[in-house]
Length: 91
Image (cartoon, rainbow, N blue to C red):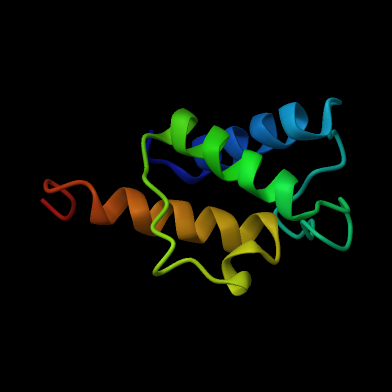
């Protein structure tokens, strides 16, 4: 998984699982806390599901609240982790 649409789809699927409903209104501008009302335990579940779906490992040292503001910022973080974990990136 490496393209933006796949990353956003993985996040959307994970959010659906966390919220136990589909999230058809989801866009990259959807805010995780304000719009979806996620709490800290929901975020932990989201992180684990996205790790499984995308093959990344979330590093607590480089994850901060800015990465979790919106679907867009979280997708940017996931893509950066994918690039960091892929030795062939840039070839």
